[in-house]
Length: 309
Image (cartoon, rainbow, N blue to C red; front, side):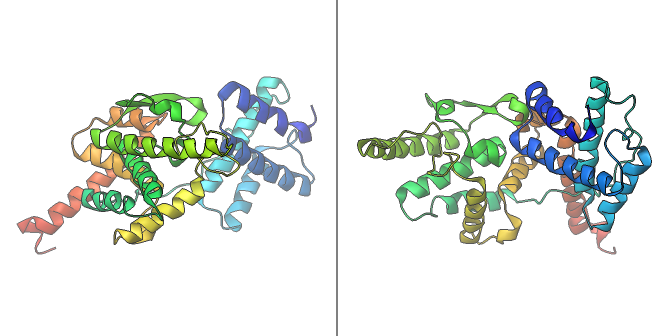
């Protein structure tokens, strides 16, 4: 098959065989199209590219000021494309297999204290133009912190997953992988309160000929559920109302807080990996580094022998 036609079958295989999410598919398409354009501009193609061509492309990304994480993602997409091409018999090798990964600085997650999270949760229940909005906002933040869900998992949570006052939630994560996460009694109360208000809203909507939504947090937008960008901005507003600098807070920071606070209170790293839906425990180990930094600060700030440092 001609190299210019490789991308679409690769994307179809990623969808069908690995259950890749739509955001992942879009990223693959952008990254591989950019690499193809680079090759074509230099008179090359996917089927003719060699290791040096890929390394030249990676150097061009450095010159363009792209971050190590972005460069790593693009190299990963290229490697997977050539792995697929090898399996399909379009190439007899994978020229990207020996290209070195860009070095990435280990960035520690932003950290919120338990007191700051408490203030955020309280502020969520006071943020909104009416009682329904406030109940929804409070429920969303409670669920986010109680479960460690990704923001995409939260906003698209189906109403059916919360039937019957559950003490566990079934979450469908990346690659359509399912996991169960427990709900605290406090989160269950917030969920019950929001479901009751949501039911009343849906009844009023139906009386006017409106269509019922299948999502826990419905919206009139194209997706049918609360928009993740809108939620991001909402969290910033709640942070400001809680007296916390908005730049320190995002939905993902609450996911970090969930994991870090569990670990600080004695939870097992493998259990946290399961709750977060990490495919590899190495992704979860970043939280041990956060605690290492906290322990260092504790010693340096409070140990009598540290006074002379």
